[in-house]
Image (cartoon, rainbow, N blue to C red; front, top):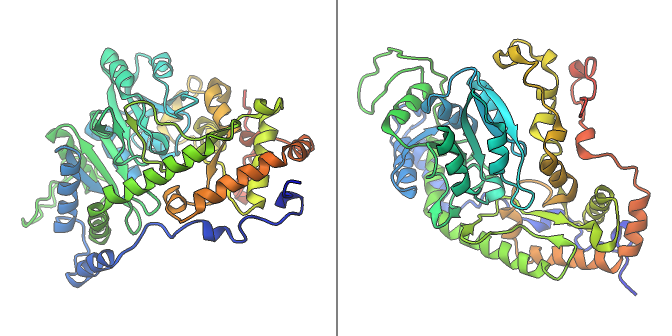
Amino acid sequence: MPTRLALFGGKPIVKDHKNLRIDWPIIKEEDFHAVKEAFDDRDFSGRGSSRVLELEKKFSQYHGGRYATALNSGTAALHAAFVATDVQPGDEVIVPALTFVASAMSVIHNQSIPVFADIDEKTFNILPRSIEDKISKKTRAVIVVHMHGLPADMKAISEVCKKYSLKLIEDVAQAPGALFHGKKVGTFGDAAIFSLMSQKNLATCGECGILLNKTRTGKNKAEMLRIYGEIIKPNTERAYNSFTLGWNYTLNPIQAAMALSQLKRFDKTTNKIQNSARRLNKMLERFKWVSPPIEPKDVTSVFHFYRLRLHANYFNYNHSGKFRKAIQDALNAEGLNVRHYQNTPIPGQLFFQRPDLHKNLPWTLSRKKYKYHIKDYPNTLDVIQNTLILGAISSAPGYLLCPNTPDKYVQGFKKIENNIKNLLKYADKIDYHEPWKEIPVISDSFSTTYEKPNHT
């Protein structure tokens, strides 16, 4: 007699889901010491700070000598990447339909226009042939997001960019340290950005972004954007003479201090995350209705998120969305939290569906041409419908590094498999709506004018 699922009144595997994860990032004495030193030195301004400069130097060395510029967020770094690579207002930039919204919003910060490409259903990364399908005479650049820590197909994407003379910008926010054919991601394109905010694999105490440029000229442009269009050199008097537009994207030295401390043990920590993720991958092989994250040949993931694909057809069940929701409910009831990461393609978000709410943005002036229909991204919809992210909050490392957590999730899948008949009956009764059709309204000011997007 199989043990009853907690969803049906059985005993949950985990009483408190907080026991499934460790606090992330991992803070050690040397991190406290590094931050305290910055306080003791009263190193509070990022303009010419020796700690910010040292972070740039160390990060550059870690990535083979690319020109590094530290900024106050990954989004700021993306904005700076467009300026550094001469992407102009009105230019089109191709962005994956599945990513964090900053990848697209940063395009609009530059007054450029995001055009979305579909993703690969197995790797969750931007699909090279979809990039090529979206190229027009106005296309200037491509953003490649190394989603969930797995490198995109940089060989094929680089060839497309070279063929059409496009700038290649890597968004490495989720993938520092990942390798494609033995080479670190972030070193393939004309520019690459990193986010070191507190939930990332390489984290600091707050927000932090780093831009890598291929050329010194690109770095100079990024540095002027970082402050007020000025050139500020260490240990020299500030001239207060602006050459161009700037945005005050300076990084706090305290955050630079912690990032430097974390960087010293980053490879060691990454190796532990990878070993745990691969162990979980191996244990999940017994469940033919679950596909763990993949690592194609000569590609090395850092497992920022751990995304699982579910296969309803293994049980001859013909509603994959209901099946995914039933599995989600069952695991959550067991205390084994799983969730969505992005419940709609980025072009399906309200910002892109309702131009009347922000008519003052330059990219909306050509709105008739730039209409976004989420059914144009079938692979993205399929991934959202049929996959789940391990954990309730934060990224995967906090879960993967917690002792016995992978084993607990395996117990949960085993328990589900032993109760699958009852769970499928439960699935039949679910009043199901696709995740992208359930966009919540969180503001009274929006609720008075909001109508559900016409997802055609």
